[in-house]
Image (cartoon, rainbow, N blue to C red; front, side, top):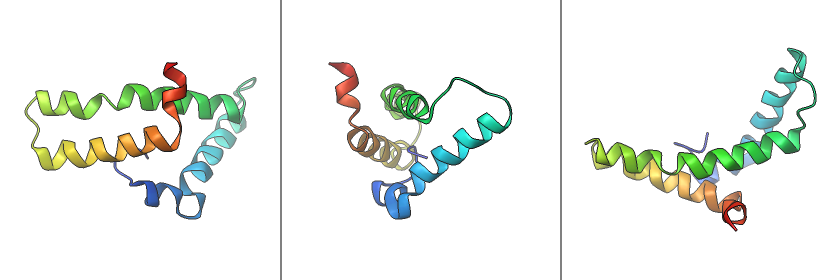
Length: 89
């Protein structure tokens, strides 16, 4: 979601959170236990810390700027929106 959606796209009508909630519901429907929505959201935040490096790797690998630059912008916005800096302190 964070890779190619802008902050507005992710947050319009709570789209990103609703999808995380839906994903969590499906996990529990399929038998996952002991994994709270809060834990999922924290894991998502941790993922954003890692994913922010992906466009840099894309650029290094020779991907065109019109591919990796929008991706980097979306991911840095999500990084900020989810306060991922707090995870690095």
